[in-house]
Length: 90
Image (cartoon, rainbow, N blue to C red; front, side, top):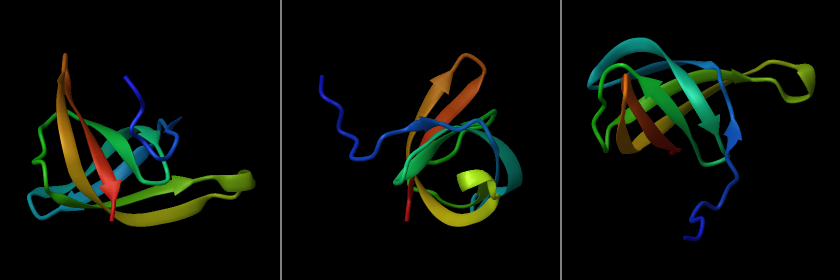
């Protein structure tokens, strides 16, 4: 099976502030990040197609930089203790 992703994912274990029309603001944990999106973990499900506001920090060259982006939920997976979901940056 070939990899369909255009951008390489990297491990990204950081907190992400999340808000959206169907969810109240909360802090979730990111699992990985790419130039095109990220994977998040949640104890509650989210809806495919929902647009979320995401706020998190990256540290390029040792300098923290705040990122404020919107993400579109593309898939949701059931895990043993919660859900992982992928968002594409829009």
